[in-house]
Length: 273
Ligand SMILES: C[S@@+](CC[C@H](N)C(=O)[O-])C[C@H]1O[C@@H](n2cnc3c(N)ncnc32)[C@H](O)[C@@H]1O
Image (tube, rainbow, N blue to C red; front, side, top):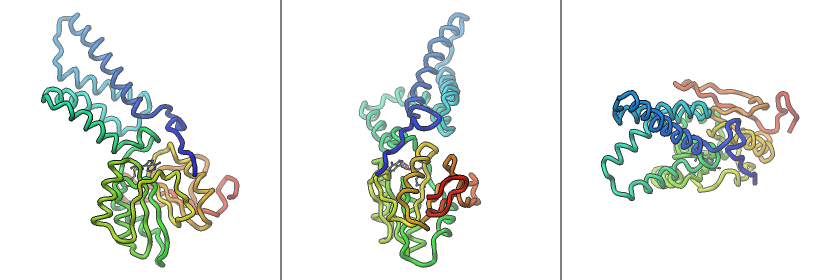
């Protein structure tokens, strides 16, 4: 078992959610404090919609300065108007804790480990299927399987292999488990397990689509546990100081790259296993 790296292990210290909240709070202070005072000093009554849009933009700028990933940008821009509209609708009080719990159920690992949710597209799943051998009996793991897409697709197109997805975000796990239960094949399964506790020696192929944060520790875990000849595949994220043995370019809009490390082979520019 390996300890997970904290979000602090990246070059961007601090959990992203905290940085995002600080960005919004600072933006509110600047816009509703300073900006409003300035507007009234010069005799302009700034409309609320303008102030909310300004807060969104200011929060996006702070988020950028805090080096939050770019996918936070639309969240920053939309959050202030969304909160204002929700308050104006006078929604019942339970809606807010319910929304919070739902967000927690999805973004559980963004807060804990700096891994957000984005999903492998069909072209990537097709490229993954091509990496799998003709003969059956192999085992494939998706570490952090999100909604279970790769497990469901690959277990359908490669019935001769066994596919396991590991997920800890409660809502994502529930959806992936239900999808697998009602639409999946018998050679696929979804487990509510932290992948840091998974013994990777059970698998011939270990796939992950995570973030830069866990990659160095995950690579070390893979090197320690995976059997010679087995393959670690990282969608998009490299491991600093350990170049992949092979990179597969996927022909999709985001120009996905699959980084492949074959276990048991001598590392390029580094020590042997
Ligand atoms: C970017 S998504 C990728 C989803 C899926 N593998 C795919 O390619 O469509 C990463 C997922 O990893 C999950 N995750 C992050 N850390 C995890 C951990 N320690 N154990 C299990 N799941 C984790 C997140 O909740 C998230 O759903």
